[in-house]
Length: 158
Ligand SMILES: CC(C)(COP(=O)(O)OP(=O)(O)OC[C@H]1O[C@@H](n2cnc3c(N)ncnc32)[C@H](O)[C@@H]1OP(=O)(O)O)[C@@H](O)C(=O)NCCC(=O)NCCS
Image: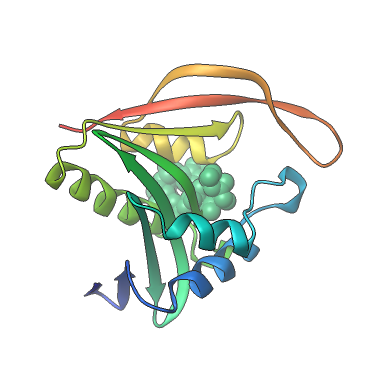
């Protein structure tokens, strides 16, 4: 389905979905942290039951996407990324609004995600209403071997 508003298009189906995801992924993630997924990983997971991919294009250009997986009444955010040139315009917030609306329709009770400590994305997650529920010490390893804690966050869907 495609929904439009103000030059933005939200796509959750279609042949171009994977291409858009990979274009955004390549630009958005810092290779230093090794957090980006490759095309094969994305393609494999996007076909699985409960997996939802949502892309925003702005004036036809892929700007941001999220990938989530719902199992029973819980949804996990697997990936979220916005291209640098489209940041701080509310793209990620708009993607979350759609995800939360979908969660309400489907009676999903919780959204979960895990993020590297000190990732600026934490500001976004707290602003949306996620709260910390756990930590995994030294869970992530960067290219130079530095270790980073993972923070687990939860959002209660009401
Ligand atoms: C994190 C990310 C998805 C945010 O996307 P975005 O579209 O710029 O986010 P929004 O415009 O919706 O931001 C909404 C609010 O979140 C907070 N926020 C977002 N990015 C922030 C940053 N880099 N630093 C501080 N606060 C930030 C701000 O409060 C912002 O509101 P404001 O712009 O009015 O101050 C984007 O920076 C990104 O792709 N980062 C690289 C990939 C990544 O780390 N993904 C998350 C882990 S999977």
